[in-house]
Every structure is written in C-alpha cells, then in structure tokens.
Length: 392
Image (tube, rainbow, N blue to C red):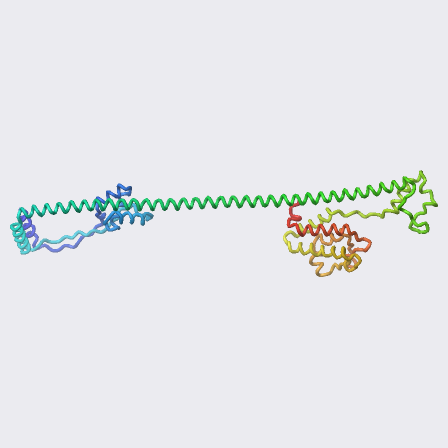
C-alpha cells in the first residue's frame, strides 16, 4: 500500500518545475531537556533558549557560561530569531520512481523477521545505555555548573564587602583628621589667649610697681620735711640753682606745705606724659592691620624699627643713630611710607623736624626703659604670627 502511494506521488509529479526556496524568521530549535534544566535553575525561557542556541546547543555548562558572560546585554531576555528556508522541490521522474519501487521490493524480500527483531533489540539496548551515560554526564555537568555559579557569586560578595570596608575606613580616617585639626586649632587659640593674658598681667604688674615707686618717693619726701631737715638733699648755698635753707624760713611750721612743693620742684624734674607699652603695642597693631595683605612689607618694617632701637640702646652717645633722614630711600620705602611707622618712632622719643626733613632724638630725651620696652614689643610682634589679627 505504501509502495503504491509512493509510486503515485512519483508518477504524478514527473513533469513539475523546480520552485525557488522561501525564507522566514523563526525561533531556533534547542534541546527540550536542557531547556527544562535551565528553567529549573531559575533562568527565564527566553534567556535559556538564547544561551542554548548561541552556545551550540551542546551541553548545560556551555550554556550557563554563555549566560554568565552576557548577563549584562540589553536583549538577554528576548527570544532569538533566525532565518529558515523552505525548499519546494518537484518529484522524481517516472524512471526514478520505478527504480525506487524495485529497490524497496528487493529490500523487503531480503529482510527477515528474526534479523529485524535482533537488530531492534540491540538498538534498544544501546539506546538505554546511551541515555544512562548521558544522564550521569548531565548530573556531573549540572553539579559543576552550580558550583561555578556559587563560586562566582561568593567572589562578587567578597569584593562588595571589601569595598564597603574600605569606604568605612576612609570615613573613619576623615573624621579622625577633622578632630585632630579642630584640636590643634583649639590649642593654638588657647595658647594665644594665654599669651595675651600674660602680657596684660605683666603690664599691670609694671604699672603697679611704678605707682609703688612714686608712692614711696612721695612718702620719703614727706618724712624728710616732717623731720625738718632733708638728709639726702643739700643744695649749694652759693649756686643759683639751689635754695639757701638757712637764710629763709622754709622750715617754719606755717610754710611746711610751701616747703614740700618747693622740694618737689627742685628734686623731681617735670615728667612728660609717659608712654605705656600698650600705646606702643597699639601703634604696631594698627601698622599690621593697615598692611595685613602684605606680610613681607610689615615684617621688613618691624626689622628696620628693631634695628634703629637696638643701635640707640647699644650706642646712645652716637648721634648718627639718633638722626634719620626722612628722604633716605631704604627708610622711606620700609618705614616712612607706612602709616604708623614714623608715629612709632615718635612714641619712642624721636622728634620730626619738618623744615630740615629729619627725625632726631635729643640726647636728653633718651629713655632706656622706654626704648627697651619698644624693642620688646617689636620683637614680640615679629615672633607672633597672629599679632594684630585676633583683636578687633
């Protein structure tokens, strides 16, 4: 019956013409068993089909490796499409059909039932063995794939943990550095406040000592006149500068107050308004504030001022150190052109002669205590980097 149908199909299409092949896009065919294994592992169907197709549809290990390598691709979840050709061919010629029919008849007569049965049994046995071996191989491949996937996941987790630990360590280091900077700034400000307080305390002590010396001096003078005879004051009787106590009634009880005032006028020279260290410090502070953006110029001015004061203290008899020409290029550039430079020298005892254009310090105006105090203030301003910056 089958041979008859084959003959009719062959004979009926003997004069047909060969038709061109048609092409269409279709989903590639993959192994259904391996596709099911990938779906059991949790991979989507589209990803599984794409992995099996592009890995050669050979084994699970290749498919999973392909998935791990291409997991970041944007089209990983889309089904792949491949072109498929449909060939339309005409049937064989009548002669070819007759030859095929005769060949099939000959083969059917030669085959025996026993041989067919034995061949079928042997074929079934081989097929079972191949399936068992394939199952064992697939189990081993599956186990290796799972281990590989877990090891990769563990490696990624360790890397993420290392990055988290590094970020936390960097954050702790930044916090520690900020604390150290804050502590250093606080210590610097505290030391500056201590120095200011000590300086003020020293000024107060000096002022207190000066007042105490004046008080003792006045008390001693009163004691001398209360006793009626000053032991340490003996003016020259023949001198025009002195006072003849024996020829006057200066020690008379009614003229005691007048005697005391006369003694003070002779014993104590008129004192000009004293210059305090605070005035010197304020002058230097204003000079630095006026030129706070030019530290080099301020430092140079302080150096010149300190040199002038030191020269006078070391050589008070040398007039050249007590006489400064205002138009001197070095002096004018470093001190004379700065607001507060000449004023500081005037506080130290210099007098400005506008007509001659000189700053001079008369010999009788030299005050060593004032010059020493001025030198101390200039040196302190040079050593203190925050001088004049913290005060209002």
